[in-house]
Image (cartoon, rainbow, N blue to C red; front, side, top):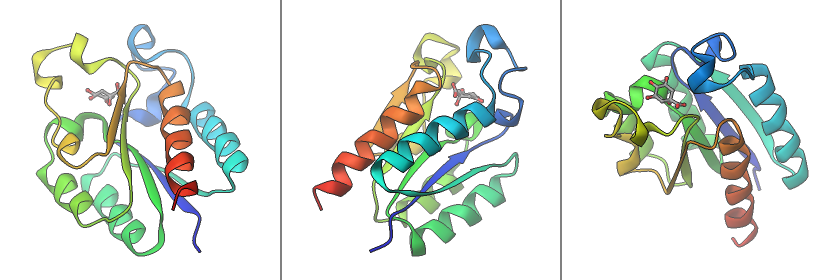
Length: 147
Ligand code: DQA
């Protein structure tokens, strides 16, 4: 059985570490990937870790994942709050989907309080910094071990 898990990151997350470190911290996206790879190795997952600033690219990766993957962790970044298209793509997936935000979006501007992706996500983590990714992957590990 496939053990492929996707971790997808949306716009501006390539600037992690440089972008508003008071909000997002000083770790880079490479640090996030390294953390995810270490948890993936623990659980025997194959990991596809991707970032894009383009909505269509994220959608194409979701379409790819729906054919090949057993789970997904996604930080859609600003598309969280705007993208019906990403929600629609995720609703075509049968595997568990966990939404992660580095910052606590509920403590921020009102427009960040609504998430289209949450209408599909099986769980949401916000405000745990980059540790949120590892927590979401561990939850996937627990769920997939039970199947
Ligand atoms: C974010 C929160 C979003 O509101 C924001 O647009 C991002 C990052 C987070 O990880 O905290 O780019 O998803």
